[in-house]
Image (cartoon, rainbow, N blue to C red; front, side):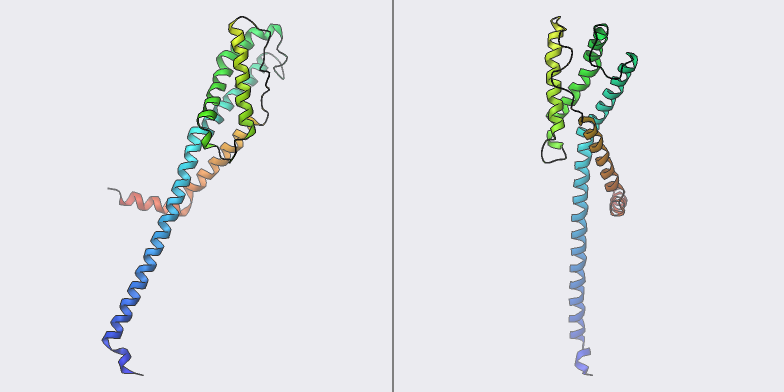
Length: 198
């Protein structure tokens, strides 16, 4: 064995190189971890925004509208609201103006003003059909204010896939939110952040 290999300068050089390599590996691991956590945080922020400002309010308003509609049908002992009989007209106008249209207006406003939060790349057809349905009812309610009740329903029908779309999207986002919140990496990140905070 060559005794010069064990000399102090070579040992110091090797130790310095090893220290630099380990420091670089540590920096790289920290950088990649921070980047991954930032992406996860950004994704969670978007999911929360979609839930809080779009799909959550749409879901609640849709469920409330569905429950109210079923309640009206039960009260009138009907399985569907149309045709609207003359004896049901007064009650239909009351429910339309005080319950259904206010809920429709809320949903329409959400869809129009928060369309950028839609999960899909293109606006789903059922959302466009819903807005068109509501616009049709606005025309009907306008004639009602003039005392003309010949039109009793919107000429543009209710989009049958609307409620299903809203419910599926809401549940999918809630599931994604839960997964993002409860992953082991995310929990560790939160523990470290809360530990550092004074």
